[in-house]
Image (tube, rainbow, N blue to C red; front, side, top):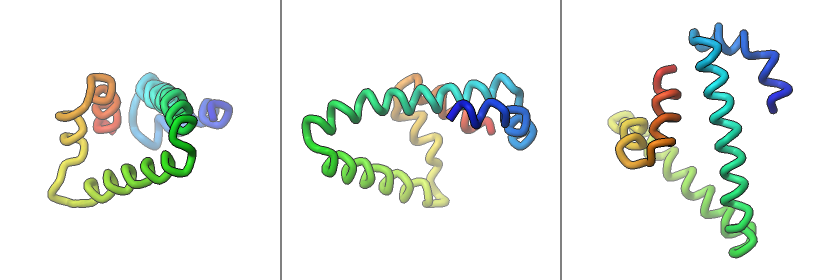
Amino acid sequence: MTERVVPALPLLVAVFANTPAHVQLVVSLYLAGIGAGQLVYGPVSDRFGRRPVLLASLAAFLAGTAQCQDPGQRCSSWVSERSSKPVKCVGRAAKSQ
């Protein structure tokens, strides 16, 4: 992933009209989230099997997507009110774009 993103950082800065440091932070947080997800889903799928964990994850994703599709809801404020501090930081970074 990083082999493809690093050469594109100047383009990402221009497209999102942001600073290089902010774009690098978003990419770093994305990669950290992917790594943390592997640490969680690996043991959970070993315990319950791959299929139930995949179906539960898909259901959670679809429920979150459905909630964010409602124009009356503010998904980013919902996340920032009900989540931990790291998620709030990621939400603020994404919201500022």
